[in-house]
Length: 319
Ligand SMILES: Nc1ccn([C@@H]2O[C@H](COP(=O)(O)O)[C@@H](O)[C@H]2O)c(=O)n1
Ligand SMILES: O=P(O)(O)OC[C@H](O)CO
Image 1 (cartoon, rainbow, N blue to C red):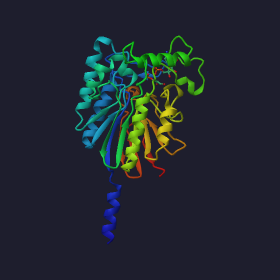
Image 2 (spheres, rainbow, N blue to C red):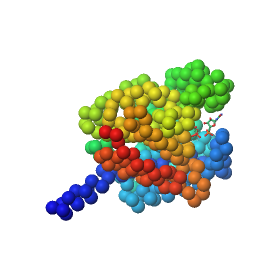
Image 3 (cartoon, helix red, strand yellow):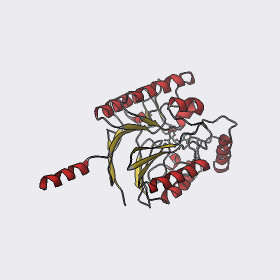
Image 4 (cartoon, rainbow, N blue to C red):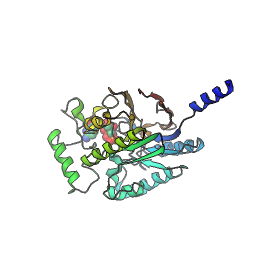
């Protein structure tokens, strides 16, 4: 009897599924540089970080991997964009399992949506990049497209570009719409390098969460842009993060929101007990160091085990 009990206990410690995560590789075949605020960026070394991540994920036989966006940097010479994107996608393809990609602002500086999405294997007739998948019956992953309403990536005359430019024009008085000068607190997110989730996508999210609730699934939301001000700099937030969180908070199935974009990383638990974890950028790893992780999903918590710059975090669900 004691043995049986012991075995049950052991089984409970086994994750339902394990997967790899990485964000903001921002590769470019250019010399090291730094961010607008002076943080060093290692554009070539980030490829090595990705290679080490894929090797580790394969060694650990993880079931799938998620890339949280910005695989290539905006400083990549534009005549090299396609080659650079293909090079990074090819590195991801060496992983022995499916890789789910998200788009980020830097991807869209390099390639328009219609060229980018097929390379990332995001199949969508209207060039939108939101989708969901369920790697095990107990969990549903919802990947949001934070650049649905955006001034980057769509053709200049596309209704979403026009909507985004009007939106920015009303909220950001600076001639450089990437500058938050004069904007206060959370209004500092009204920058051109951010974007919003559109109305149709919000309605789709609501339907997916209804369905997940019916199926008794726990949900992990993934979005390049952060959704909680406590986990992120104001300048990195999704424009309509509160509208998206209002939908999420109507359901108790959403346990965790994961993101990238804010390179220093962050963590919070919001007023509804939803965990928010922003992943530290691969781009900002000094040579020889890493920023990637492995996530183990359990019934009542998840464990993010980070490598070097990517901090380890256990997230225990509130109910
Ligand atoms: N034209 C700009 C661009 C950026 N900033 C500020 O710098 C921060 C980091 O920008 P990176 O794209 O280099 O990571 C950003 O959060 C802005 O606050 C700016 O002021 N003006
Ligand atoms: O991804 P980047 O280079 O646009 O940087 C985004 C900023 O870190 C947001 O504060």
